[in-house]
Length: 391
Image (spheres, rainbow, N blue to C red):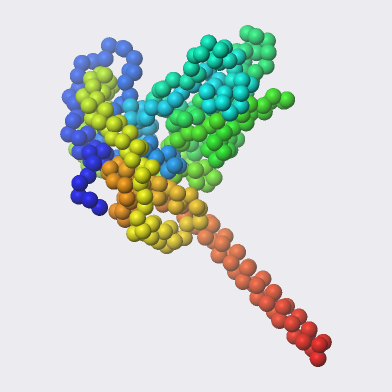
């Protein structure tokens, strides 16, 4: 790989963050903290930061799963992405009506308020930054997928369906903390939306279909329970987040946390220039990405890794090569090299092997061999009998 590195990748290695720890400023007088913790103020955890940035550059990677114990900055890192996310078109309507829906399905696809906006020549969408939508652990199924709009039912005495959190997440980041503790019915709804890109709510004779295309990010503490394989497979990159081992870095974490608790605005301001720089470079990488191709050497290395690991899921190739393309674009290049594949291989291939599946397929292979031997023997006997009859 080229010796010249983009400053985006250098920033993710944490060199600037580790050297910019602030001393504790004045005491907070009770004003609510509104500034997110700066992404680059997170000490260490380069692999986690890299995975999150790659997923923002290229959503085709399939999302990110952060696995680690409490207090390792998983949730902080996700929420700190807010200033790095790109701009997109967002609906101004609570029902999510857009010009695209109007063009594809006509006036029946939008609500009466938006139909009035169209009549006055007003837009249905505005340019806005991608948002992070949190899915609460105690969310009900109707909260997640949608259901009867209770406000309309009470105020207007009529039944109307409304989108749920999955609808709000369309075009945004859907973050699920403690994803391994979700109820199965909620998990199934998320899986359905993630695979189809839309969701249909049915309540009696009424039905509502809405788009639900999102970047899925989850975090979990493995000590509290394992994640269902079905939803594990939906996460492209898998990060193991460990506590920092270096005592000096751990003290820097304490200093940064204290600075943020006492004066979040000052801490955020100290990183504002670097935050703006990395946001611009992420946007540049997103523009470069469509032109990025995979070299023969990189393709062969990736396929060799998957073959040697004996991974069955076809999402392994998608994740590895799309992550390598994002890494290449972050380095401002247009051809994926073998080193790009190496840089993302661990993130892409973790937790893709299953000892249970290996044992299942081993037993099945033995059974198949017995059946094939039986069939070959019967076929041979039938052939001999047929020859004898013809004689």
